[in-house]
Length: 294
Image (cartoon, rainbow, N blue to C red; front, side, top):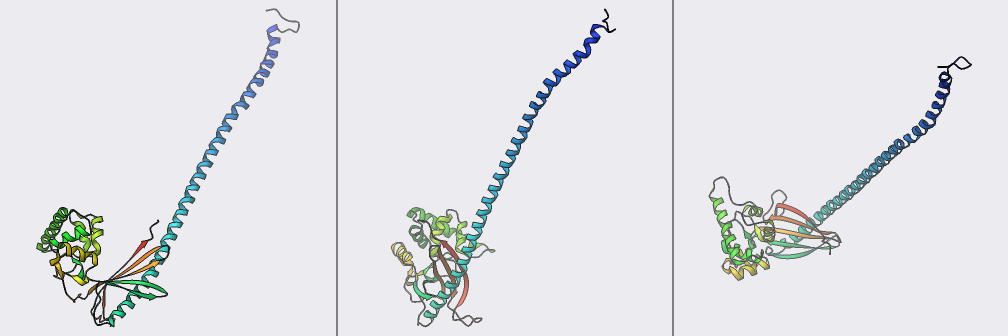
């Protein structure tokens, strides 16, 4: 290869020049590519951050909504509890006033309602002798049939079949040595064919008593039950002035625009030696019935 005047070959003289030019071209192309390649990475990071923030906002919104619902539920429960407490106190006072009124009379009440004044409110108090209700431990099939047709609106044939089942179940229970008679009307729910809706319709007319009475005192019975029995089983109505000593007494305390508190007391018209009162409290129950929307 021929030498140039400087003593270098032509390729040796061109090499530094080419290297400098290639370096310039590399920088001119690589730097913009480096800057442009960093933009998508930063954009992706910003997008992920936005998604995380949105998820956090959604979670906080759900938490705030749940907390608000919890606070409202707790406030509603506290309101119902306060109304139950106040209604129970007013109902007990009304029952006591009604009992004092009847104690001054020569006879015990029948199936009737009296109205008492307490704290400026008129509170109805209903007296229901057990002698006028259906004793599930001794009622015959004819009484069950009349009750199932009247209260539960069953066809007569279906009512007769279910009445027969009830009596059979009761007799089978009585033959066992470890179980006695039914202790509460709710025990009927264990009988095939008696569901809760049917029981709910029967319950106001039922009692569970160890008394062997199978008939129903006519003047002590609720009007509806008396009419059903007069139509289908008049022989089961007993004309008597003895309403017995066991009663269910119910006070109905209305809470304006909210609902009704039912204060129910079961008592015996016998002297209580512990309190000195002429009646003895056997059981107590208080229920709240909210006002249904129109």
